[in-house]
Image (cartoon, rainbow, N blue to C red; front, side, top):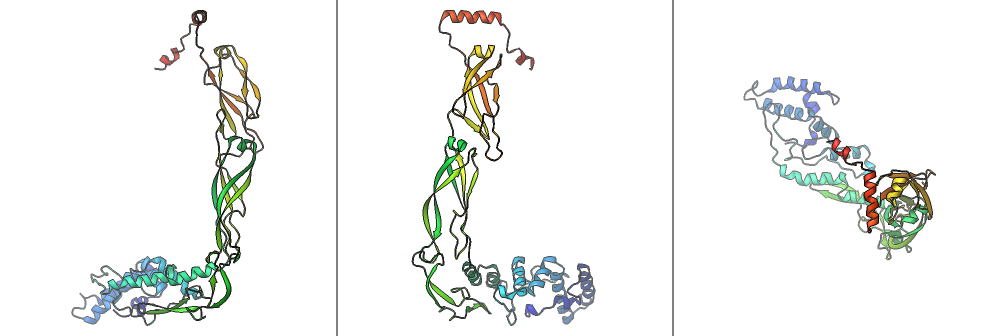
Length: 407
Protein backbone atom coordinates (compact mmCIF):
# COMPACT_ATOMS: atom_id res chain seq x y z
CA UNK A 1 0.00 0.00 0.00
CA UNK A 2 1.24 3.59 -0.47
CA UNK A 3 2.81 5.60 2.32
CA UNK A 4 0.21 5.69 5.05
CA UNK A 5 1.06 9.16 6.22
CA UNK A 6 0.03 10.59 2.84
CA UNK A 7 -3.52 9.27 3.05
CA UNK A 8 -6.04 12.00 3.67
CA UNK A 9 -9.14 10.16 4.85
CA UNK A 10 -11.11 13.38 5.21
CA UNK A 11 -10.21 14.39 1.67
CA UNK A 12 -11.11 10.90 0.41
CA UNK A 13 -14.65 11.28 1.78
CA UNK A 14 -14.83 14.97 0.83
CA UNK A 15 -15.51 16.19 4.37
CA UNK A 16 -13.90 18.57 6.85
CA UNK A 17 -11.83 17.45 9.85
CA UNK A 18 -14.56 18.78 12.09
CA UNK A 19 -17.22 16.60 10.45
CA UNK A 20 -19.69 14.88 12.78
CA UNK A 21 -20.31 11.13 12.83
CA UNK A 22 -23.55 11.67 10.91
CA UNK A 23 -21.79 13.70 8.23
CA UNK A 24 -19.15 10.97 7.85
CA UNK A 25 -21.83 8.31 7.45
CA UNK A 26 -23.76 10.32 4.84
CA UNK A 27 -20.60 11.09 2.84
CA UNK A 28 -19.58 7.43 2.75
CA UNK A 29 -23.03 6.23 1.68
CA UNK A 30 -23.13 8.78 -1.13
CA UNK A 31 -19.72 7.73 -2.48
CA UNK A 32 -20.40 4.03 -1.90
CA UNK A 33 -23.47 4.17 -4.14
CA UNK A 34 -21.36 5.79 -6.84
CA UNK A 35 -18.29 3.51 -6.73
CA UNK A 36 -19.68 0.18 -5.52
CA UNK A 37 -18.39 -2.76 -7.63
CA UNK A 38 -21.97 -3.93 -8.25
CA UNK A 39 -22.76 -0.59 -9.86
CA UNK A 40 -19.48 -0.51 -11.80
CA UNK A 41 -18.73 -4.10 -12.88
CA UNK A 42 -15.23 -4.75 -14.30
CA UNK A 43 -14.18 -1.15 -13.53
CA UNK A 44 -10.77 -1.30 -11.78
CA UNK A 45 -10.67 2.41 -11.01
CA UNK A 46 -14.09 2.32 -9.33
CA UNK A 47 -13.03 -0.77 -7.39
CA UNK A 48 -9.86 0.95 -6.13
CA UNK A 49 -11.85 4.08 -5.26
CA UNK A 50 -14.36 1.99 -3.32
CA UNK A 51 -11.53 0.42 -1.32
CA UNK A 52 -10.18 3.87 -0.48
CA UNK A 53 -13.48 5.27 0.77
CA UNK A 54 -14.17 2.04 2.68
CA UNK A 55 -10.81 2.30 4.43
CA UNK A 56 -11.41 5.96 5.24
CA UNK A 57 -14.86 5.20 6.61
CA UNK A 58 -13.55 2.28 8.67
CA UNK A 59 -11.18 4.62 10.53
CA UNK A 60 -13.21 7.84 10.72
CA UNK A 61 -16.49 6.18 11.72
CA UNK A 62 -14.83 4.57 14.75
CA UNK A 63 -14.30 7.13 17.52
CA UNK A 64 -11.13 5.48 18.92
CA UNK A 65 -9.55 4.90 15.50
CA UNK A 66 -10.36 8.44 14.39
CA UNK A 67 -8.72 9.90 17.52
CA UNK A 68 -5.51 7.94 16.86
CA UNK A 69 -5.56 8.99 13.19
CA UNK A 70 -6.00 12.66 14.15
CA UNK A 71 -3.16 12.48 16.68
CA UNK A 72 -0.60 10.48 14.68
CA UNK A 73 -1.56 11.18 11.07
CA UNK A 74 -2.28 7.55 10.19
CA UNK A 75 -3.94 4.57 11.83
CA UNK A 76 -2.86 1.06 12.76
CA UNK A 77 -4.20 -1.48 15.23
CA UNK A 78 -0.63 -1.75 16.53
CA UNK A 79 -0.72 1.80 17.96
CA UNK A 80 -2.49 1.99 21.32
CA UNK A 81 -4.33 5.18 22.39
CA UNK A 82 -1.78 6.01 25.11
CA UNK A 83 1.07 6.00 22.60
CA UNK A 84 -0.89 8.19 20.21
CA UNK A 85 -1.67 10.60 23.04
CA UNK A 86 2.03 10.83 23.94
CA UNK A 87 2.96 11.49 20.33
CA UNK A 88 0.36 14.24 20.07
CA UNK A 89 1.73 15.92 23.22
CA UNK A 90 5.24 15.70 21.80
CA UNK A 91 4.15 17.39 18.59
CA UNK A 92 2.48 20.15 20.60
CA UNK A 93 5.59 20.73 22.72
CA UNK A 94 8.63 19.27 20.94
CA UNK A 95 11.07 20.61 23.54
CA UNK A 96 9.92 18.04 26.10
CA UNK A 97 10.85 14.98 24.03
CA UNK A 98 12.95 14.07 20.99
CA UNK A 99 11.63 15.20 17.61
CA UNK A 100 10.32 12.42 15.38
CA UNK A 101 9.64 12.95 11.71
CA UNK A 102 7.70 10.22 9.91
CA UNK A 103 8.23 11.92 6.57
CA UNK A 104 10.13 9.72 4.15
CA UNK A 105 9.55 6.58 6.21
CA UNK A 106 8.46 3.69 4.03
CA UNK A 107 5.19 2.35 5.44
CA UNK A 108 4.67 -0.10 2.60
CA UNK A 109 3.67 -3.48 3.92
CA UNK A 110 2.14 -2.04 7.10
CA UNK A 111 -1.60 -2.44 7.54
CA UNK A 112 -3.70 0.57 8.43
CA UNK A 113 -6.47 -1.49 9.98
CA UNK A 114 -7.54 -5.08 10.42
CA UNK A 115 -10.73 -6.95 9.70
CA UNK A 116 -13.17 -6.67 6.80
CA UNK A 117 -13.94 -3.22 5.44
CA UNK A 118 -17.46 -1.96 4.88
CA UNK A 119 -18.87 -3.09 1.58
CA UNK A 120 -17.56 -6.62 1.87
CA UNK A 121 -13.97 -5.99 0.71
CA UNK A 122 -11.36 -7.54 2.95
CA UNK A 123 -7.84 -6.13 3.21
CA UNK A 124 -4.93 -8.04 4.72
CA UNK A 125 -1.58 -6.38 5.34
CA UNK A 126 1.34 -8.36 3.98
CA UNK A 127 3.74 -6.78 6.44
CA UNK A 128 1.88 -7.42 9.73
CA UNK A 129 4.87 -9.35 11.04
CA UNK A 130 6.96 -6.19 10.67
CA UNK A 131 4.67 -4.33 13.05
CA UNK A 132 6.40 -5.87 16.09
CA UNK A 133 9.64 -3.94 15.58
CA UNK A 134 7.82 -0.76 14.55
CA UNK A 135 5.55 -0.95 17.58
CA UNK A 136 8.53 -1.42 19.92
CA UNK A 137 10.31 1.59 18.40
CA UNK A 138 7.23 3.79 18.36
CA UNK A 139 6.17 2.93 21.93
CA UNK A 140 9.69 3.10 23.30
CA UNK A 141 10.09 6.70 22.14
CA UNK A 142 7.05 8.03 23.97
CA UNK A 143 6.57 5.64 26.91
CA UNK A 144 9.92 6.42 28.49
CA UNK A 145 11.02 2.77 28.34
CA UNK A 146 13.48 3.39 25.49
CA UNK A 147 16.76 5.25 25.42
CA UNK A 148 15.00 8.60 25.25
CA UNK A 149 13.02 7.73 28.40
CA UNK A 150 16.22 6.77 30.19
CA UNK A 151 17.79 10.08 29.22
CA UNK A 152 14.74 11.94 30.54
CA UNK A 153 14.99 10.08 33.82
CA UNK A 154 18.68 10.97 34.06
CA UNK A 155 17.89 14.64 33.46
CA UNK A 156 15.30 14.54 36.21
CA UNK A 157 17.73 12.78 38.53
CA UNK A 158 20.11 15.74 38.25
CA UNK A 159 17.62 18.08 39.90
CA UNK A 160 16.83 18.18 43.63
CA UNK A 161 14.85 15.15 44.78
CA UNK A 162 13.15 14.83 48.15
CA UNK A 163 14.08 11.86 50.30
CA UNK A 164 11.64 8.99 50.77
CA UNK A 165 9.52 8.69 53.90
CA UNK A 166 10.14 5.76 56.24
CA UNK A 167 7.70 3.82 58.41
CA UNK A 168 8.63 1.68 61.41
CA UNK A 169 6.66 -0.05 64.14
CA UNK A 170 7.74 0.64 67.73
CA UNK A 171 6.72 -1.66 70.61
CA UNK A 172 5.84 0.42 73.70
CA UNK A 173 5.13 -1.02 77.15
CA UNK A 174 1.65 -0.67 78.66
CA UNK A 175 2.50 2.00 81.23
CA UNK A 176 4.54 4.23 78.89
CA UNK A 177 1.59 4.46 76.50
CA UNK A 178 -0.71 5.52 79.37
CA UNK A 179 1.57 7.82 81.34
CA UNK A 180 3.86 9.04 78.55
CA UNK A 181 7.63 9.03 78.36
CA UNK A 182 10.56 8.62 75.98
CA UNK A 183 11.08 5.68 73.65
CA UNK A 184 13.85 4.66 71.29
CA UNK A 185 13.86 2.81 67.98
CA UNK A 186 16.63 1.64 65.66
CA UNK A 187 16.16 2.38 61.96
CA UNK A 188 18.05 2.06 58.68
CA UNK A 189 18.03 5.27 56.64
CA UNK A 190 19.81 6.92 53.72
CA UNK A 191 22.09 9.76 54.79
CA UNK A 192 23.79 12.37 52.60
CA UNK A 193 27.21 11.22 51.44
CA UNK A 194 29.85 13.19 53.42
CA UNK A 195 32.30 13.12 50.50
CA UNK A 196 30.20 14.54 47.66
CA UNK A 197 27.52 16.14 49.87
CA UNK A 198 24.79 14.43 47.90
CA UNK A 199 26.01 15.49 44.44
CA UNK A 200 26.91 11.86 43.52
CA UNK A 201 30.01 12.99 41.63
CA UNK A 202 33.50 14.25 42.31
CA UNK A 203 35.99 16.30 40.35
CA UNK A 204 35.41 18.89 37.63
CA UNK A 205 32.91 18.08 34.83
CA UNK A 206 34.38 17.00 31.49
CA UNK A 207 33.14 16.69 27.93
CA UNK A 208 30.94 13.65 27.34
CA UNK A 209 32.79 11.21 25.01
CA UNK A 210 29.50 9.68 23.85
CA UNK A 211 28.07 12.82 22.22
CA UNK A 212 31.30 14.90 22.05
CA UNK A 213 29.67 17.59 24.16
CA UNK A 214 26.66 18.13 21.90
CA UNK A 215 24.18 16.54 24.29
CA UNK A 216 22.50 14.57 21.49
CA UNK A 217 23.08 11.28 19.72
CA UNK A 218 21.50 9.79 16.63
CA UNK A 219 19.18 6.82 17.17
CA UNK A 220 18.16 4.44 14.38
CA UNK A 221 14.95 2.44 14.55
CA UNK A 222 14.30 0.37 11.46
CA UNK A 223 14.34 2.98 8.71
CA UNK A 224 13.63 5.89 11.04
CA UNK A 225 16.35 8.25 12.15
CA UNK A 226 15.97 10.74 14.94
CA UNK A 227 18.04 12.60 17.52
CA UNK A 228 17.65 11.92 21.24
CA UNK A 229 19.32 13.33 24.36
CA UNK A 230 22.58 11.53 25.09
CA UNK A 231 21.87 8.69 27.54
CA UNK A 232 25.28 9.04 29.16
CA UNK A 233 25.25 12.74 30.04
CA UNK A 234 21.47 13.21 30.08
CA UNK A 235 21.64 15.82 27.32
CA UNK A 236 24.01 18.18 29.16
CA UNK A 237 27.11 17.37 27.12
CA UNK A 238 29.16 17.13 30.34
CA UNK A 239 29.88 14.20 32.66
CA UNK A 240 31.56 13.82 36.05
CA UNK A 241 33.23 10.92 37.78
CA UNK A 242 31.08 9.00 40.24
CA UNK A 243 31.82 9.68 43.90
CA UNK A 244 34.10 6.88 45.20
CA UNK A 245 32.38 6.86 48.60
CA UNK A 246 28.73 6.49 47.57
CA UNK A 247 29.47 5.14 44.04
CA UNK A 248 27.35 7.81 42.40
CA UNK A 249 24.28 7.36 44.60
CA UNK A 250 24.66 10.55 46.62
CA UNK A 251 23.59 8.76 49.82
CA UNK A 252 24.86 6.07 52.18
CA UNK A 253 22.89 3.58 54.27
CA UNK A 254 23.32 4.07 58.00
CA UNK A 255 21.81 2.49 61.12
CA UNK A 256 20.60 5.08 63.59
CA UNK A 257 18.97 4.99 67.01
CA UNK A 258 16.12 7.53 67.16
CA UNK A 259 14.61 8.76 70.43
CA UNK A 260 11.08 10.14 70.38
CA UNK A 261 8.45 11.33 72.82
CA UNK A 262 5.34 9.35 73.75
CA UNK A 263 2.44 11.51 74.86
CA UNK A 264 0.25 10.31 77.76
CA UNK A 265 -2.74 8.38 76.45
CA UNK A 266 -1.10 7.26 73.21
CA UNK A 267 -3.17 4.45 71.65
CA UNK A 268 -2.14 1.27 69.92
CA UNK A 269 -1.65 1.87 66.17
CA UNK A 270 -1.19 5.63 66.55
CA UNK A 271 1.25 7.18 64.05
CA UNK A 272 3.89 9.62 65.24
CA UNK A 273 5.58 11.80 62.62
CA UNK A 274 9.25 12.67 63.08
CA UNK A 275 9.95 15.39 60.52
CA UNK A 276 13.21 15.11 58.57
CA UNK A 277 14.12 11.72 60.01
CA UNK A 278 13.45 9.81 56.78
CA UNK A 279 15.87 9.20 53.91
CA UNK A 280 18.12 12.07 52.87
CA UNK A 281 17.29 14.03 49.73
CA UNK A 282 19.43 14.05 46.59
CA UNK A 283 21.09 17.10 45.04
CA UNK A 284 19.92 19.35 47.85
CA UNK A 285 16.43 17.88 48.14
CA UNK A 286 14.64 17.92 51.49
CA UNK A 287 14.85 14.78 53.63
CA UNK A 288 11.81 12.57 54.07
CA UNK A 289 9.91 11.99 57.30
CA UNK A 290 9.86 9.04 59.68
CA UNK A 291 6.49 7.65 60.74
CA UNK A 292 6.49 5.55 63.90
CA UNK A 293 3.50 3.26 64.45
CA UNK A 294 3.04 2.61 68.17
CA UNK A 295 2.32 -0.96 69.29
CA UNK A 296 1.37 -0.96 72.96
CA UNK A 297 2.03 -3.90 75.25
CA UNK A 298 -0.49 -5.76 77.43
CA UNK A 299 -1.00 -5.97 81.22
CA UNK A 300 -1.95 -9.04 83.32
CA UNK A 301 -4.77 -7.18 85.15
CA UNK A 302 -5.84 -4.20 83.04
CA UNK A 303 -7.11 -4.31 79.47
CA UNK A 304 -7.29 -1.09 77.51
CA UNK A 305 -10.09 -0.46 75.02
CA UNK A 306 -9.71 3.04 73.56
CA UNK A 307 -9.51 5.28 76.63
CA UNK A 308 -11.42 2.86 78.88
CA UNK A 309 -9.79 0.38 81.23
CA UNK A 310 -11.40 -3.05 81.76
CA UNK A 311 -10.69 -5.53 84.54
CA UNK A 312 -12.36 -8.45 86.32
CA UNK A 313 -12.91 -8.29 90.11
CA UNK A 314 -13.99 -11.38 92.14
CA UNK A 315 -16.54 -10.93 94.98
CA UNK A 316 -18.12 -13.33 97.46
CA UNK A 317 -21.69 -14.62 97.43
CA UNK A 318 -22.44 -12.55 100.52
CA UNK A 319 -21.09 -9.39 98.91
CA UNK A 320 -23.08 -10.03 95.76
CA UNK A 321 -26.28 -10.84 97.70
CA UNK A 322 -26.16 -8.22 100.44
CA UNK A 323 -24.16 -5.55 98.68
CA UNK A 324 -20.80 -4.19 99.79
CA UNK A 325 -17.95 -1.80 99.16
CA UNK A 326 -14.83 -3.51 97.81
CA UNK A 327 -11.35 -2.27 96.95
CA UNK A 328 -10.33 -2.42 93.27
CA UNK A 329 -6.98 -1.45 91.65
CA UNK A 330 -6.76 1.53 89.27
CA UNK A 331 -4.18 2.66 86.72
CA UNK A 332 -3.31 5.54 89.03
CA UNK A 333 -1.37 3.05 91.14
CA UNK A 334 -3.60 2.90 94.21
CA UNK A 335 -6.93 1.43 95.26
CA UNK A 336 -10.40 2.82 94.95
CA UNK A 337 -13.66 1.65 96.54
CA UNK A 338 -16.37 0.25 94.30
CA UNK A 339 -19.96 -0.08 95.54
CA UNK A 340 -21.52 -3.48 94.84
CA UNK A 341 -25.33 -3.16 94.72
CA UNK A 342 -27.35 -5.89 96.54
CA UNK A 343 -28.29 -8.74 94.21
CA UNK A 344 -25.38 -8.20 91.82
CA UNK A 345 -25.05 -11.05 89.32
CA UNK A 346 -21.83 -12.66 88.14
CA UNK A 347 -20.66 -11.05 84.89
CA UNK A 348 -22.40 -7.77 85.62
CA UNK A 349 -20.42 -4.67 84.57
CA UNK A 350 -20.04 -1.69 86.89
CA UNK A 351 -18.69 1.66 85.71
CA UNK A 352 -16.20 3.86 87.56
CA UNK A 353 -16.46 7.30 85.96
CA UNK A 354 -13.27 9.03 84.73
CA UNK A 355 -10.90 6.43 86.18
CA UNK A 356 -9.58 5.38 82.76
CA UNK A 357 -6.89 6.80 80.45
CA UNK A 358 -6.55 10.54 79.87
CA UNK A 359 -7.03 11.39 76.21
CA UNK A 360 -4.07 13.50 75.11
CA UNK A 361 -6.05 15.25 72.38
CA UNK A 362 -9.51 15.74 73.88
CA UNK A 363 -8.32 16.42 77.44
CA UNK A 364 -10.89 14.04 78.99
CA UNK A 365 -10.53 10.69 80.74
CA UNK A 366 -12.11 7.39 79.94
CA UNK A 367 -13.88 5.15 82.45
CA UNK A 368 -12.88 2.01 84.31
CA UNK A 369 -15.25 -0.87 83.58
CA UNK A 370 -15.32 -3.56 86.29
CA UNK A 371 -16.73 -6.99 85.44
CA UNK A 372 -17.90 -8.76 88.61
CA UNK A 373 -17.08 -12.44 89.06
CA UNK A 374 -19.02 -14.08 91.91
CA UNK A 375 -16.70 -16.58 93.57
CA UNK A 376 -18.42 -19.84 94.67
CA UNK A 377 -16.92 -21.06 97.98
CA UNK A 378 -15.75 -24.59 98.61
CA UNK A 379 -17.78 -26.05 101.57
CA UNK A 380 -15.18 -28.08 103.44
CA UNK A 381 -17.08 -28.65 106.72
CA UNK A 382 -20.49 -29.99 107.70
CA UNK A 383 -21.56 -26.80 109.44
CA UNK A 384 -21.10 -24.78 106.27
CA UNK A 385 -23.03 -27.32 104.22
CA UNK A 386 -25.86 -27.29 106.78
CA UNK A 387 -26.07 -23.51 106.57
CA UNK A 388 -26.19 -23.70 102.78
CA UNK A 389 -29.02 -26.27 102.87
CA UNK A 390 -30.93 -24.04 105.25
CA UNK A 391 -30.31 -21.14 102.92
CA UNK A 392 -31.68 -23.14 100.00
CA UNK A 393 -34.89 -23.92 101.92
CA UNK A 394 -35.42 -20.28 102.75
CA UNK A 395 -34.71 -19.16 99.19
CA UNK A 396 -36.25 -21.83 97.00
CA UNK A 397 -36.66 -19.80 93.82
CA UNK A 398 -35.88 -21.71 90.62
CA UNK A 399 -33.53 -19.54 88.48
CA UNK A 400 -34.32 -21.67 85.41
CA UNK A 401 -38.05 -20.92 85.26
CA UNK A 402 -37.65 -18.05 82.83
CA UNK A 403 -35.40 -20.20 80.63
CA UNK A 404 -38.17 -22.74 80.02
CA UNK A 405 -40.79 -20.05 79.67
CA UNK A 406 -38.96 -18.79 76.57
CA UNK A 407 -39.17 -22.17 74.79
